[in-house]
Amino acid sequence: MITVFHVARNNCRGILWKTLQSKPRSLGNGTLITQKEISLLKHKPAAFFSTAQSVCAAAAAHDHSHSRIWTAERFLSAALVGILPAAIAFPNPVLDYALALSMTVHVHWGIEAIVVDYVRPSVVGATLSKVAVAAVYGLSVFTLGGLFYFNYTDVGFSQAIRMLWKL
Image 1 (spheres, one colour):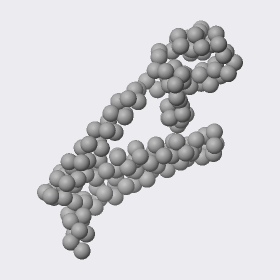
Image 2 (tube, rainbow, N blue to C red):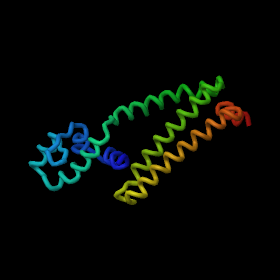
Image 3 (tube, rainbow, N blue to C red):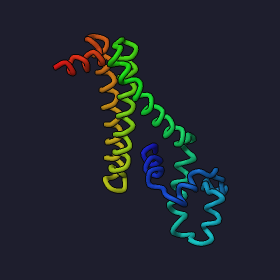
Image 4 (tube, one colour):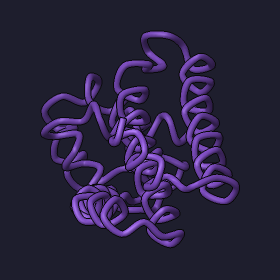
């Protein structure tokens, strides 16, 4: 279901995106519909209702705002501009773990966006799409665990970068 909503979010432009932003109402038979859909149904009922109904139901099932996620992605990217040089200039465990976590989350969000955009259920099927998203999560968990393990048992991520730089 999460994949369906991400695909809907990334594929919605114009009317459908505005539909996702408005609050859905129930028609009484389990169908969710918005005020904008009601006005649009007067013009194109058959073509719009089938897609908008499933997109609107997916939007209602996930009650979180994607503008907050977008803002978090931008804050993390801006924070990396400061964390990366600080960790290399002043290597210590706190900055090593902060760098490992922020880089892993940054890369995860980027790869997840690529997978959601290009491994769509309409192109490769629902099962393969879910497997691809699950693989992204598995890769991110494995990467974060590996970096934390490296920070704990070895010289640390920032010191390793400094050692590679000296080569």
